[in-house]
Image (cartoon, rainbow, N blue to C red; front, side, top):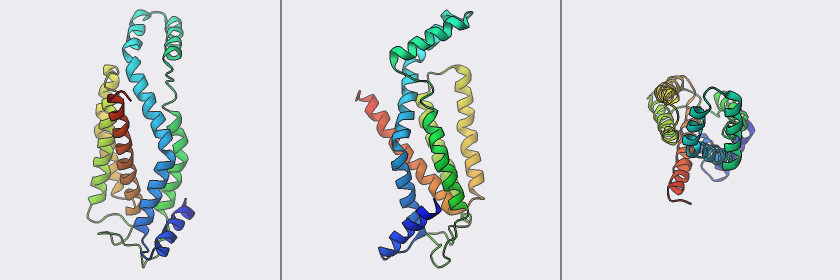
Length: 211
């Protein structure tokens, strides 16, 4: 991933405007485009689970004292509807190596001091002294979670309350650690969130139109 970022920076050099900031933006867009089919698969899986949630509740109520029969009927329901409850987890697992590699690449990247500044940032290798990026990382994380919570609105009461708690705790945690992380890494996180938010918005809109 470090080599990939260096290549993106080389592209900006050849374009006559060397910038590590633009290189990080290029890297983010390329990675998100590569992973977009996996993200789409994950979203479709969550939407499928939302559609069959009422039927799942009916089965749970009907076979409350018979777990074996419940599991059998659940398998039938998944097969009939074509929904795989595990398909939403697989894309996340596949994306983890990308997330880990970009994390370490941007956290320790050896920037050229002559070009490590970007916009209001004096150094992409240091935390944002204005605290703008940490706030953006927290807000963008909140918007992503709020968007996904809308998809999962029909889940159980216990799960719903947990999601509401995480919808507050996770953005605060991401914002807090962003105060300590290099600006380049936080830029990647914010742009990734924006890209995913746009992708989810398009998919949700198409679903509401029946496409």
